[in-house]
Image (cartoon, rainbow, N blue to C red; front, side, top):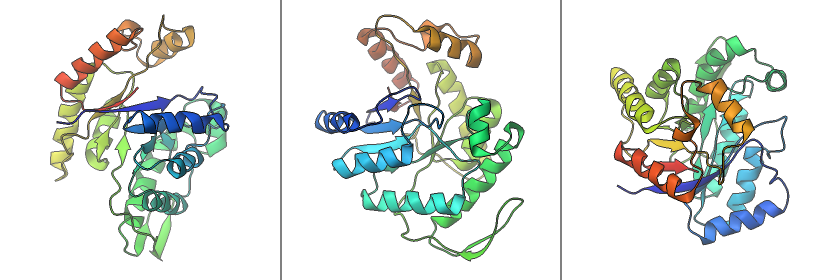
Length: 270
């Protein structure tokens, strides 16, 4: 089974100017598999759709995805059109990945969706986007969106959508809706257990996720874990020792990747 290594820029990246082009060119030259752009409207990180388009125009082999793009609050038909266009123009190199959105109040203001409403918005928007990529007229009568005959062109040849998350509700959503799983702040044991849940839920819905569509995001920090990362881990996974999920040397990073490979994980965003 082929192991693929990609590079991700977090929400705190300041690579939002012409210098991003140099990084993209080097990733292509060094034959990395993919580039992943995070989304945070209220931070320095560039808009992922614009950044991915910028990267696509400079490269021929490098794939690109978002880690992750917030879906609740966006017009699903307009977004489906934009992503279908980018996927087609890039020769199928787009790896779309979506999430519910950050819990920061300023981010929630920006998208106009209350925290307790995000999951329902997500599920309905995702359903609409899948219909848009089918090439058939969209007929949808939902709580938030109603369409009768809308369609989106061009039709992408293939649009594998990745979802993250490790909470029980998130694992079930992956099993019901996604083509791949890309969680963060997880251990190899987490991935092994989470995969079993996803496969069980997928089978209940007559679905199957391809064996090589299980990945993980691995944050690393050479020379020690920054306080900001420690605070984030304490908030999201307080039961985990930061040393178990954040390598601080190249050898630790290689060792952790091998441990993930041992439990069947083959896609990596570092």
